[in-house]
Image 1 (cartoon, rainbow, N blue to C red):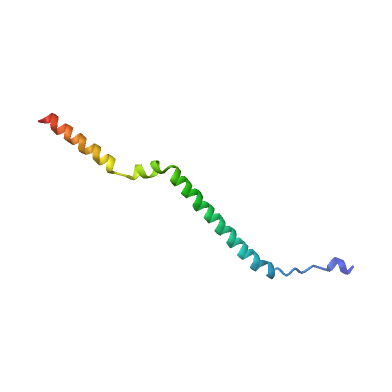
Image 2: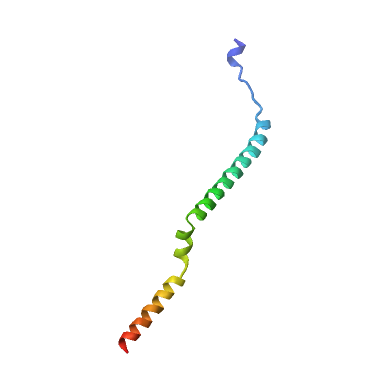
Length: 74
């Protein structure tokens, strides 16, 4: 009869400090993996990312078109 009223008490204080440091370590590993994946993608598709940001090709194109148009007018 005493067994029916008995509620076990579990002390979780020791587990909390362990899980916090373990969770931080897991988050750090996940962050490093994310950065590594983004770096690999940036290197693999470098022409797509960095050539589209470059304006030198467009500037050359505009200046050559302007020269051709001015030559036609004269």
